[in-house]
Length: 558
Image 1 (cartoon, rainbow, N blue to C red):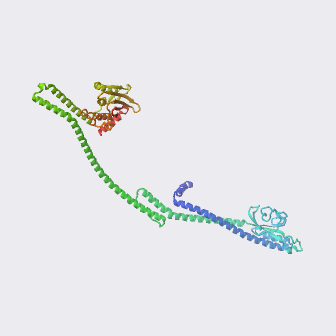
Image 2 (cartoon, one colour):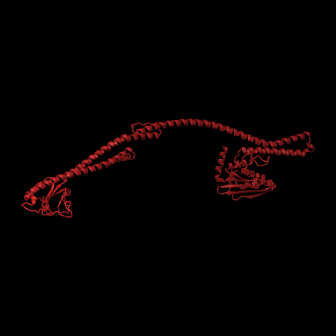
Image 3 (cartoon, one colour):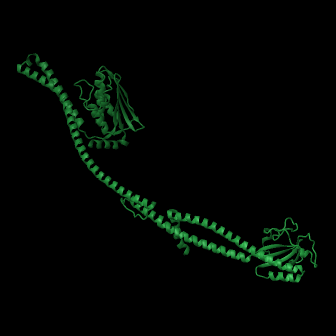
């Protein structure tokens, strides 16, 4: 349960450290303190160890000198019992490991450890390596060479060994007890060994105390730094973050409290000024937007009125143009009708019809009838162009429609010496269309081809299936006069014709294009003056006829 409860806290701490600037600063400063305090603690412990060892060495040196001076008295009198008793008394003091005396050859003559007596010192052992070089006899020792520290083989504790040479003095070499040669410098060696267990214990205790004090100081400093960073860095930044979040959510003009006079305080004041400027700019934009919307509405109404006026003007212009064309086209036959009607009236008043004018009167009546039919044709074409007749959609064979159209114009082809060239695809599928209106389109194209070849020529009619776009194509081609290049782009516009005056009103191709568009098809033309023209009518198959008719019908409704 303790582990489960600590997991959210650990996760929260990790999240705080990974995202909070204050947490990162605290971790960095704490790491720096750990390194600095660890280095200082290490140096302090090392210095304390050196001081303690120096003090121990001084104490050991004094103890060794005391033993040496005490032993000198007994040695001059050759009082071995007194010498050994003195050494044993001193060796029994606390902190003394052992005391021994050996000669220049390393033969141990006395030791507080009875097992070593009458043995030879191992000059290569850890306790002796500082006093001998390559097993040579001891002749002289400097002060640093007298001390050595090694570990005892019994309990593994550190031991400080002090080697004090027993020099050959004149009173010793001249004594009656035993004589030594005057040239012998060293008579023996006093080896005093002091235990460093107490010093090591004190050093360990002081090291532990120092580590504890250092850890407590680091913890205290970490807490103080965290509080300072939290107060001086984390809180102001958190306030800035909340203000920025409010500003991003649309709370323009929000203000945050300035808590300090440092850089963070300057940043808070800059944020407040920026927030106010943003609110002011937003208010200005909203005001300009409302004004702009009002202006756009006003301009839109003005444009609509102007557009309506332009449409009205265009309608009136179209009506005027249509009226002018219709008046011009109808005026010619009406003028002929009026002229011959007045002539007939004059002949009737003079009773000249009986006197040789009968045939001329008959011709005048035929002219009047022909011009009247012409006026009716003009009016009928206008009605066809202006009104859309309903489509009678049914399954139709295109080749049969072509055949019916040719039967109507075959006599005129023979009269104008025009050779018909047929290329009908017998495998054409049926299409959904109004056969009568398609026949009207073909008849208009064939009649235009006949009019373009007044001195005879060739007329090609071709039907084929375009598999790639699933359409049927009807091609009407002649080798007549062709269409001028400047008129070709406007050939399907109403009232545009290349025929002589009185032979057409220019509505046939316009009506044909409307019929093809209602069927979802198209009509195209290619022409070169002097070489003839080619009209291509394209009808969609049943698969895409419905959408085409729907689109054309929608266009007509609009």
